[in-house]
Length: 194
Image 1 (cartoon, one colour):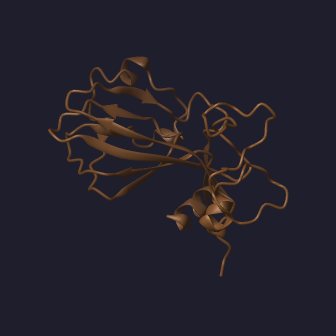
Image 2: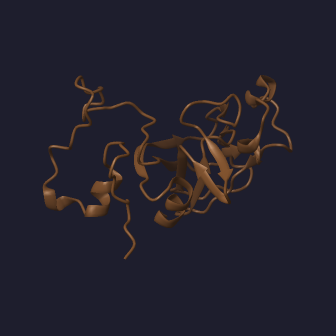
């Protein structure tokens, strides 16, 4: 995964935040969101000088099979390059059409997409529970989610706390770099070239 993240976010990318999604049969849709318009801070996608760059990148790991028509992740292909906002009549997902794609996946596979891509969740129709992990990454200079403590509250001093329950040897150098707070000056590459 690291080579893809490096290509799309730069050599100093970092883990920003993540969550799990569990859906039982009949669970309702999550309206479309994201997209290239309106421009939002931290949700950028661009191509310049032959290089694709994104500011908030999602890696969705499927923990179960998702067949075509099961529901779950859906996207509007090409919307990350759009100069027009998604009409609210379409964003509600009340009447999905050919413009919308459900994303089938095999358990253990990953889908990488920019938050600038218009995406949402279709109602879950499969008999088995949908299980997925969403990890979000940013360039090393940026944080999308605010500073937080282990109890989920923001740190009062503005700093990024270090986990107190981890010994120095519990994390590899790469793991420590990917979890570093955002900054620019003299930041090490997340995965230095060998």
